Image 1 (cartoon, rainbow, N blue to C red):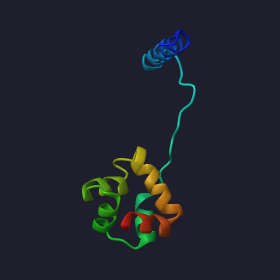
Image 2 (image 1 turned 30 degrees about the vertical axis):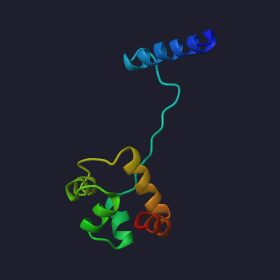
Image 3 (image 1 turned 180 degrees about the horizontal axis):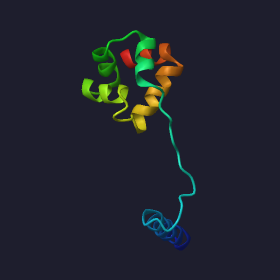
Image 4 (image 1 turned 180 degrees about the vertical axis):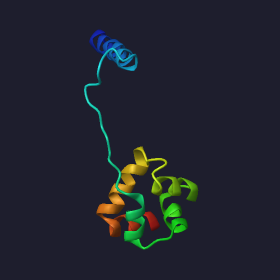
Length: 96
């Protein structure tokens, strides 16, 4: 392995360790603010069962999102944002 590449990898590992220990702040952070799940579902005119199936989550998970006991994270939050902004495209893609 190239010495320069190795040194960069070691540096990255040290930085990650410091961030994990709270000794350093991450250089960047991504947050996807998810839209109101119930509003998105109602905008589409779907039942909880239909929307949960579309999102590929359990009805219980969907209910937790709608009642704000839990928040969708990661890919689910991103998918909700896509569905809220481009519902026709999202529905066509998810039903394909």
